[in-house]
Length: 431
Ligand code: SF4
Image 1 (cartoon, rainbow, N blue to C red):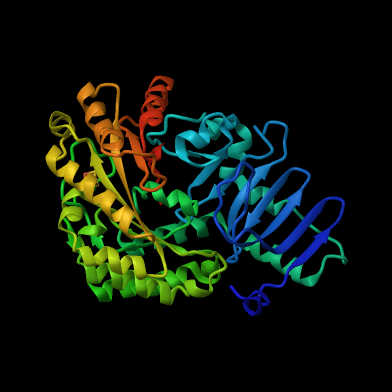
Image 2: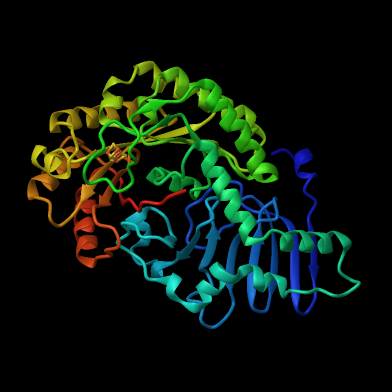
């Protein structure tokens, strides 16, 4: 965003002994990996002796933390997603979090997922007070003094007018635009702190694997260009003034790579233009989607060249799951180990040839799986690669949900130290 556009968001600060208000704070404009809390985009903040609340440009709450003694750590905070979930970001004591997930802060989710790490912050009173009752806490902040600038007073009135019910309705509207809530986002979306705009270019997936907990019943079907354009225009209106704080899109649902090349490129280019990413506050636009083994093997080579020329850095995540036939059959994934190996080789070639395209892949992880599963995976991520590479992360996805486990974490570290590709845990997160 250039300086002229920034002039549309004049900053204002008010402070007395009970409250501080900062309007249009300029946060960081690049997502960074750093061991202290960073806030991104343009936002506004109110702080009292008890709490800190932050709001987006639509006057909707987006971050919160308590200053009470019961709050675990001063550097930990809560974030409300566009899907209206609260996420608690914990430091994990810094021990092992960055090695495990590639990020310095661990997202603790309100719903069951496959994370191996983290505690139960949503069972602590300070956290539930915010997730369940933030609006009551906000309503109690009254700044009744003539020294409060009119603009700050208006702003306070507006943030109080946005009720929890409004935010819940807005999330439902978001899900309705694309047809359904995204039950899973690519692990690579961590590079944008999961701040993505979802556009469905296809429904369903090819395989309906038995092990998968995020699938739906829809057969693979691509959307039309008109449908995609309608979504983009409705999303533009829904994200409203806060659109300038976004620079990332997720092309859903579960296998956008299997959609025709022209449709993928059309969706990406139209979104970039309509969302005004060239003039977003956040820099370096990102494009995320999933792909299946068959979609990758069939993909036209020109697709990667064209993606490479887009004004996005593109991350495509492929569910390989296993390179062992018995494991694939056990988990009910209808592809052969030979196809998985060929797909893995193609991933490496694309990663070496296209600087702006990063292919990542997933393997399942569980103590009940055979040694052959880990051995065949290590043959790929170590045996076939002669030296360490920084690009092309491999994500290990625990099969069980709601089962944090030190033993499985230990297994993960053991595999990670041998891998010649970056290896992380995949925490399944919804929109
Ligand atoms: S793992 Fe992917 S392809 Fe398999 S059922 Fe789940 S969404 Fe579909």
